[in-house]
Image (cartoon, rainbow, N blue to C red; front, side, top):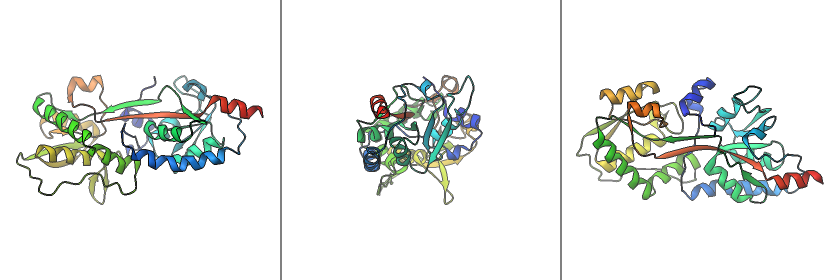
Length: 305
């Protein structure tokens, strides 16, 4: 399986991390609502279109093909690096960018492109809406697990954060935040501090790099995003005020280990190398990029007509 860590592929691409968009593994049902309606209308358009697309069954089959992506997403960044020849490339013929993921799926259904690279959770909803026409490859293109970095000298904080992560996942708080930033569900409010919340335990400082929308980015002079909002929920749960310090990504672990920050949260991928320097909480988010293709039998039968 091809695996690319968040920061490594952004640096290699030479593109600002602010353009990257990854999606979490969420159980939220509202993601389905955001994806299904447009995909269903796209399916009706495809019914009248003749297919000339060869069945794609593996990543290797993408060589010479055109892949559709949503503009500015992780899929966009990753697929753009796979165009052309090279031993370490898929050898794509090109990448077509669309403002919405649903537009890319419609282009696939009408045979304007050969595949779509998109967040796996959203991909599942498009396939569910078009079970006779679409499928995803068994192998994800890229996978990452995000967790919170805590000093090895502060195991009590790691344990406390793990407990809060479990509670906020179970009660739907994390899903609400993902609905707001990932699914962009209409009316999704994310997390708001409950009235009467008190902070008897002082302040926790979070080190981040606010250049990775939608996880952490600056809007109207404030650091917002999935990580910022979830960190607020975690600190509220534990009775701490939250202070967020923006810094270079490569400085986060050093800041935590030196005591300048209590924890680091920045869409940070858990890697063996980092685990030698820092402890990580339980994973709160898993990002993956799936490849949607036309089902082989549909492509073959329509092409024969």
